[in-house]
Structure formats: structure tokens, C-alpha cells
Length: 246
Image (tube, rainbow, N blue to C red):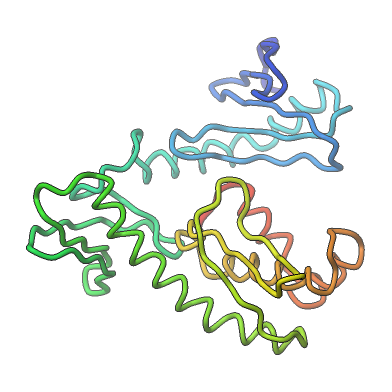
């Protein structure tokens, strides 16, 4: 079994640092049943969340079994994503529906962003003096439009399958949620960042929120309905937790 260094005690909100071989892990203890691992951008930070009473030996064993997986996905993330925040400059790699695409920047008198299938790239037309924020706004305008198109197709399909009236939906940036459901207003909200993820993961979040119209919490009834309508929902949820976009 790989050796680990003694953990550095830190504030519980920041996690506990463990070093196993060449892998630095932030450990968080919570009131949950199972342990899980996440690889987080932009630097491939490894976070492990485990049940509060899990022993240190059990934590080390759990991480040790996953070292190959951790190294593989940490490398993939670091290879695709930049070490610094995006500047929306030529040659950067940006995720779009589960794949990393090269951003090609063209200078012009108008502002436009679109996906170019022939070169498998995202094209951004902007002015030379445009700031990073202005360029980002143009790209995110495209993101918003394309995610809206996808949801406009998926929403009626799943409402029919679930026997639900068509709710209103909103797309906006959210820091801590992939989506939310407001049953009293017959409305769901989807995170704009989902446009960077595979369609199967977008579909999972949508179904998750729609099922809340039938089951308001995450109890047995909710899980039963999710399994009935989306049998592999746990696999999709695991991908979201791990930060795997494809």
C-alpha cells in the first residue's frame, strides 16, 4: 500500500491535506454514506469527501485504490485546461457540450461567436481593443443561445414522459448548483455552465429538477423515480461530481 504523509490539520471548511506518493489530496468529512473523489479545474485539485467517522486508514486505502484513475484524469484536465483564467485569446481550449475545442479569434467591426464544425473549433469575432470581459460576454451569449436550444428540445420530451405540465425555465450562472426547482412557481433554473458538459449530463440535471415536481426532497421516492426514468442517473451524477465534462 502506498505510504502517506501525516495530514496537515486545517480549518474544516478548507479540508485536510494528505499526500500519497505524488498526489496531494484535500479531504473533507461530511454527514454522508459513501466516499467520492473529484478532480477540479483549473489545476486538477483532488478532493475526497468521506463519511465523518471514516478512519484515516480507510481513507488512505480508498485513495490508494484510485491513484491510477486520479493521475489519468488529473493529467487530462491539466492538459486541456489552462493554468490561468481564460483570456479568450487565439488558441485557448474551451469546453462546449463535453468536448474541448480550440478558440479561433478573428478581428472585425462586429462581435460574434459561433461553433465551426468544419474545423471543430469555436470562432470569436471581436474588435482588437475588446477587453477579456467583452470577449467572454460574446462567447457566453453563444453559450446561452445554444443551451436554450437544447433545453427547448429536451424539456417537452421529458415533461411528456413524466406526465408533467410544461414549466417555465431560466438559464443563469450559479456558483453552487447545477439547477433548481421552484414548484410553487412551476419553474426550473439551469446553470449556464452546463453548456460545457456532455448532453447526457445536461439531461441528468434537467430530469433531476423535473422529478422534484413529483418528489420534493431526495428521499426514497425521488431515487425510485430517477431510477425508473433514468436508470444510469447515478453514473451521470458521479461524472458531474468528478468534474468530468465528457
